[in-house]
Length: 538
Image (cartoon, rainbow, N blue to C red; front, side, top):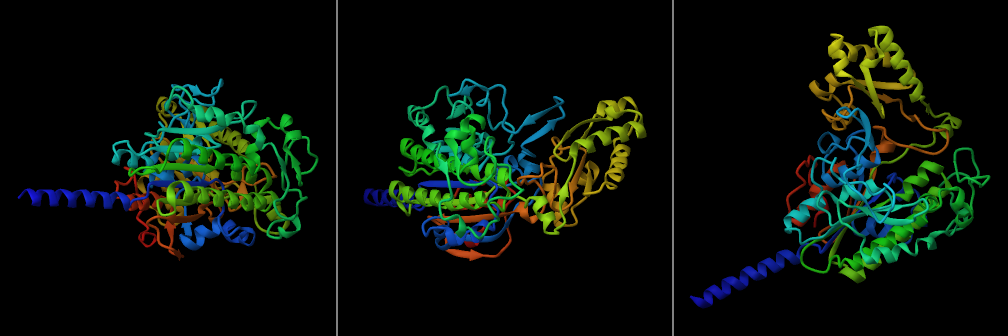
């Protein structure tokens, strides 16, 4: 009898050990801010064999992956990747939005109850408290009884905070200006670890001369270096290579200039390696989580546009960052001990002035003028412009107290503004709160609007601009629409538990978190509406 008990005990222990060893020791979730899907193929000839190509050849390469909501911004994108759902559930409806309860605009990770840690300013007064659901990193923490560690890092606060979730050990982001260091919030800790203080002493090493990594004449996949579609940097007459960051930094917000160069990605990669080393990630049987958001790609895209030599060189260099990270993980954690995925938070549009010069329909929209016209229209139609309380992105918010005072039905104001806005040039579609709350979507565009609409946080009227029409300066690129240039994203899964395959099946960004949940054998994030990508799992 005793021998049988011993045998049963040994079997149980071995099964537990097998189950634990079957899981990756570390999951790395990478978001490349503003990465269009096409960059994987467009610049492929310049990539090394050890970066993007390794992920594409040895991992699962989903070639038809999209965001299923609008607006396609950084905050909603990062939240959606890691919660497995859309703004309609996780509540991060934009980077900033008008808060109807306090009558002011709020930032998606702003938390005035917190204090900065590592900075003398207010840049650390942040937390994930506005995200209403858990992230996959949260679920891993819960599943392991908080033994599994979770960290989020980025140059942007929202890119670090939202993916790491509510239970993270820490989120760290880069505070530029005259400080030039990684900081955090009192939400996570009271003081920075010693290793981060040491890292912060050397961030000035990233002030380098930015010239193309390869001969510029070989960059035939992008436009000319000198053109009329780029902003560039202050105190440099043209937006052309090379850029001497040390000589430009004083007139370009000092350390902030690093964000607009590939050296911001270099710095973040080095920081990620230091974090893995110093926090001992992937060194025991409880899965750890690290989320990395490469932000420089977004800053550079906004500054120079998606067809620029600067964007191409940034991705050629980012490929080396990915190769560097993979090599480090193979040595530190073990090639068969980690799982990595890479995606984006949104894409970007070609610079409309560039498109116009090539006879492609596009344009610019004056949002400030529209808002003035709306106030004027409402005053003329209903006698009081105060019925409209605020604006946020492409949304209009009503003042329900004023509506009640004046005995005006919200439906009447919605209907009037709907027909008024539909007369505007460059406005493609208009949605009212009534349409979104009580009507089922009839097509993918309507569905995208519904998935981005949160009943308590969103506005009462939402308008959408025509393709390639943006409210933005005439140089540089932006994003936010429901169109494929903003919604199609790269998706690469690689490492333990992932099959090597390419697929043209249509998937959504919200499918990533439930897929990783299935791989780890843990509960899905509590607001998940995505589905498991079964063919990605080995």
